[in-house]
Length: 83
Picture 1 (cartoon, rainbow, N blue to C red):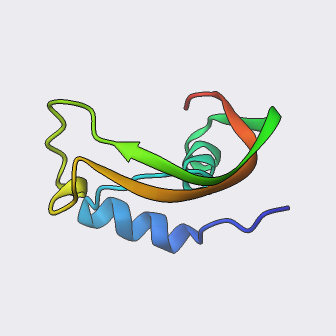
Picture 2: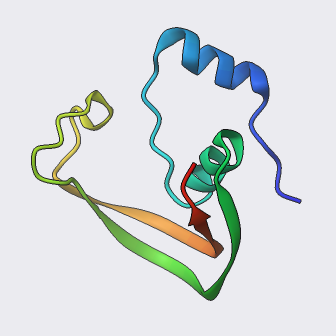
Picture 3: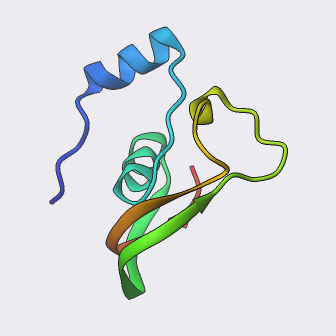
């Protein structure tokens, strides 16, 4: 029963070619919108986590960010099938 992003937001992202990075719920929302499968995981994860850029990644999404940075995660579901 989690809320979903309005279709108008997805239309704007597509029209303007805005890069999107989904972390935790954002990744689950992307999977939902584009046909992936999200279902309960075997364990819950909660707390700080480190995001590390893959060597050679030159996406504008990471412009101005360090190679590694902290994020907060809180989830019990996981991606079971990639869209």
